[in-house]
Length: 251
Image (cartoon, rainbow, N blue to C red; front, top):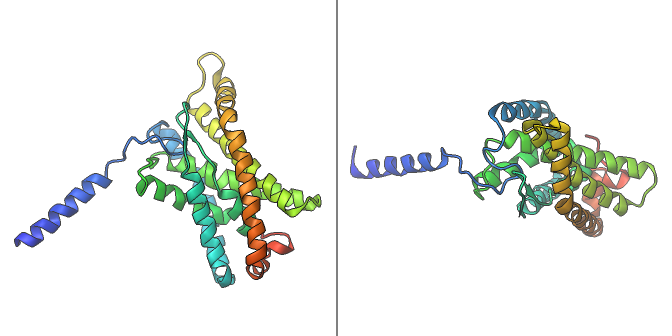
């Protein structure tokens, strides 16, 4: 083995050592190492069927709507940027927009489970936000529960003849709040109160999140409605192709 080969192996060893250790960062939705192992595993297993459905839905979307791939990519970038804007919390989590409502409204909630887990992985590794051990719990709350609720709210609002942009606002903002309700439940299950049990912890966690999350959810709803309005102006053919202008896509 020559000197050059030894240097390459040495660099690869350093690279492996750095990325094999999960940093104790606190920026992730539920921070690194905060949940007990059994909860990390349980939430991860619970995500599997949703991720499988999301994979097939994403594959069909890409195959059927080639012209809309740019909008699909934009939905992933939108979730990545918005959810990276963290506000520290004292609960073992962080408050931030989720950005998952837009993709759920346009392409269906299943697709967002795949885009969402990719967003969380990129933030954990590339932005050093941590969250590899809590990836399953974060994926379930932010990339599964939030998008499904956003999609349900949007469909319900359109059936009730609510203005389209108002429906988008409601879906994005309520989906954001729902994400944190699920997060509160996840934290309460892992750390129930010694006096009042899980329910008392749930009330405390939701009480803390409500202070910061309500204005964030409203802002996300407004921004998402603005983005959809812009898309209706500049990408009308693509929105028609994916079925959004006829009332939205199926999951």
